[in-house]
Length: 205
Image (spheres, rainbow, N blue to C red):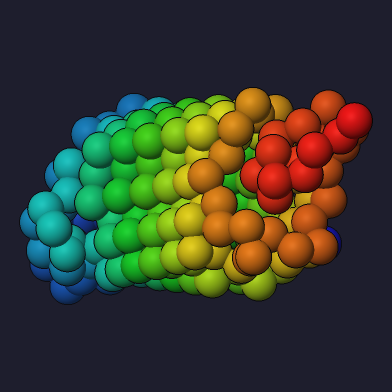
């Protein structure tokens, strides 16, 4: 599956306080900053590097063509936020709340996603690659072309999410939380088969 990378500018624009007051930030670069937001803001074509964030609820409405590199968004509420052509790279997303968010053309690579909550979200053309996603919640999500590759998924919760066609074979886990009748046509490897045979009440003699 091909995922379009963020469309970032060759040169970035300086950002003023007035830009934040206007609620739209375009082609900006943030590095090593603590970004505090309390007013509703849209970000487009921005590069965040080594950035920490403090958002009040509802402060961000959308990220488009944004790169998050070695950032810390732990324990933030990003519920119902839209992410389009974004890439999260080597960032800390410990306990981040993405409830009801919309992800399209998004990649998560080598992030700490433990306890993150994607419940009720829509994920379209999304790839999770080599993330630590132990006990992450994907409850009642809508998956449309989602790749799960080489992630740590132990005890991740996919309850009430249709997993048809998802390839789990390269991921690592001992147990998952999922709805059995929504786990048809998934792909697994031989070492994962004991969990799924027990899940479906299959006894091998």
